[in-house]
Length: 282
Ligand code: ADP
Ligand code: MG
Image (cartoon, rainbow, N blue to C red):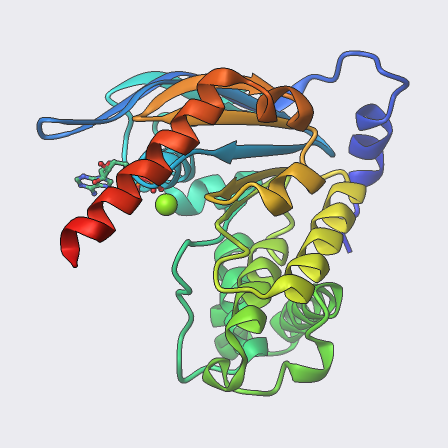
């Protein structure tokens, strides 16, 4: 399904040798009016690497994903993919370069089937051939067939092969999250960003998701996982970057991060703040 990945995988597992990162974020900042949503973010993701981006609510995780995806421009800093500066590229151009993402909220077209949903992503990635196929007939019928095959493979890969003719709205919320991942994978990404993929999932669904992330990694794809909760992320990540109030407060392996006092403080402080707010609201 992902033909270019064999090389990525071999470099990712090249006996501990340094792996050239694919996605490089350097000193990125973002202001919204007076609000400094992101103070100074640097991170990198290599082929076949799973990097976590965690932090309390409002710490800047989704803002980071949106900046990397090209939804808005950073106020400062640089972002590159496989050595190419992304500065002047829009969302679709970044998708075509191999940068895919899912959204924190499910953003599916209610009136489409799961299969059609994934096909729309193939269209973004592989040019206008789906559309033009309707006009240009025979030649493009092949292109459409290839894209349909790609869509089916992505749906099979996430475990939705038997459900792809259902409307998006007929899928469970966990299945809708998997569908967003299939949609991202159908664009044949080098790096995929998952924004809170486990939101609303119960324990066994999170396990399925964890296994899926492992299989994505095994394809040589770099994964940036954003999560609010620690559980899943501790299991699947090679490295974790921790944000608090838009600033990177720690980076390390799951074990390093989970015993880092600044991280514990950020999470405990946040828990206290939430409890305080909840009590206040009562
Ligand atoms: P997280 O995903 O970690 O919960 P966000 O990245 O969504 O956090 O938000 C970080 C900060 O930036 C918050 O203070 C939020 O209110 C602010 N913010 C996010 N997006 C916007 C926006 N489009 N306009 C103004 N402020 C925003
Ligand atoms: Mg968020």
